[in-house]
Image 1 (cartoon, rainbow, N blue to C red):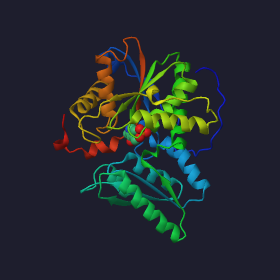
Image 2 (cartoon, helix red, strand yellow):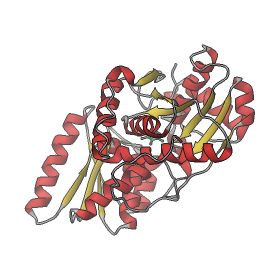
Image 3 (cartoon, rainbow, N blue to C red):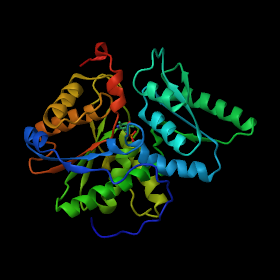
Length: 331
Ligand SMILES: *Cc1c(COP(=O)(O)O)cnc(C)c1O
């Protein structure tokens, strides 16, 4: 960590259990020929854990501050973000409504089961497009306001500049733990799903990382470079650090989405088995498994240099392990 750099303090709630552990994965690192550490944000301490808790600490502070009495958010049927929003809202006695994008969703495995246990109101929009979902959310929110309610809207993944600040905090933890352990981190590898996690880590690395790179493994086909640059710059503004400004080409995105978002891939499943077999570490088929597959690939093709020390962010997602349909597994 390159000294304490002045940033504006943005208020947040205390919902998770931080700092999360970080430690070396010696056997996995041995298998890949690199020094690899894991940052366990799957152990963030709310419900089944995961990365959205850090974002929600900022977003829900804002919701409470604005006097909201119901929080609406969205995601896919197995959305970890939606589930964690409902869990955090329960801690704050706020109502949560999850407007999920899903065609013909059957049963209630994985996160849908947890959503039900949490008592969240779940509605499905039968579409493939978030445009349709946001239109429906706007209708619902107008209806709520007409009844005197005060809805607070969180977009998919909580990936807005305010939520991104949660991962600036995570980067700070990583560098301060590394400093204490006497380890120099060369690169952080994380998932790029809606972009906020990668953006926060990248901004944190620029502020505190002493040259550390951030590589986001894309688990969806999208223009992540643009999204990430916008979030980095927006979050930097919030911190009063408009002097930190990046362009899309500064975002290092490595694609590893297989047949598409939330479609389990063979490489992803092999990577899940590798982490499970070497370290007893369980990754998920939608995000962290594919991210590990990307890490394995980058060690194989030399994108990650032989002498690098890498932190792999475990961002959660365990519940979707219980919702895999083996018939969905494709190349
Ligand atoms: C949402 C999510 C991600 C991706 O984070 P983004 O900030 O949306 O890019 C990674 N892993 C898990 C388990 C998630 O739920």
